[in-house]
Image (cartoon, rainbow, N blue to C red):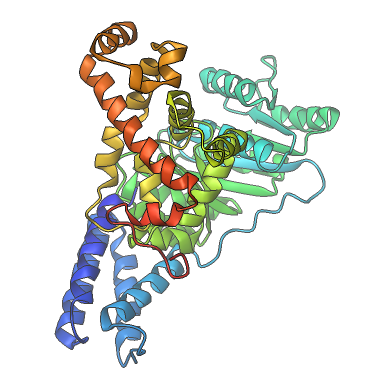
Length: 453
């Protein structure tokens, strides 16, 4: 979402870091470039002006500590101001209330409410071990109800619907009764959206709110909406007691300005961000971590949490024990690694959250090892015999041709996989010797935060 903004800001800050001291001229030039970067990211102009004014005020008379260079001192100020703009603290989501905790999602049509409802439910089921009931009051779009029903089944959540009920308020009353019957701990209500704001829509959502009496009301906004999200955000925040904002579709071609604008306009915290199309693709929004990500400092904590949630710890432990015993890393192991990598969105998603130098382009990495590419590689391994997977060195030219035919790919694709396997095997040898840090340091552009060396 913030790729272009991150590129611009890291470039600006890298140039100021090379300066021996802060001067009125280089501060003015740096802030001018920061201002342009924010405007290009579609942040609203009043917010940009306030942001730059706040930084300028803090820079005047700054005392640079001996441990920091002037450039680092300015970066620290910009980082702190970004955290302030993004909301200071992570929203405290209280699930320890009398059941059911009622969550209502509101927003325009196409903002991603239905998918977001399923993503939230999936997280509460997996992470918090809660029983969740989903329901939709979108009587205008039966397809939306069918979509939520299908998603509920996929994530093993309860679902309530009654085709005989045509009144949204009656659906909510019935869903509440059903929730008590099945002892749901959380009830998530997906409301109807419209293609534009109108009085009928706003009156309907106010009535629904009065009947539902939700503990949490989240405004779901498409992160690609840009400045078009501002008026709906104002309208919903004026009519409803919003508790927070959820950004959807942040994996798309979004410039990121909506994240900085909507929070300021509504005065409500950013609570979650949707990072992809899968039900696992949602993250808790941490202002400090996002500020670090925007400035190219990485977000290792979110990466660790994502890996723990999406990958198989048992498989990882099994591989670690195998390597510790001195046994070789084989193509069965590589397949397991590829499948787990697929769950977290490919190498590009992983590298986005690591503190890296600009020499490494996460998008380029993701192009080389994206979901489609990973599926092709798994197909190649599946076309091998058990013996070939155990003993990859036995795979000669004729075997490669047979494997390529079996997977529906080319011999050069098999060669690429084998080259990748050889690189992985070398890394695993280093890991088996307890030299993980040394291996990580050997990766070009890897910059460790203090205390990790």
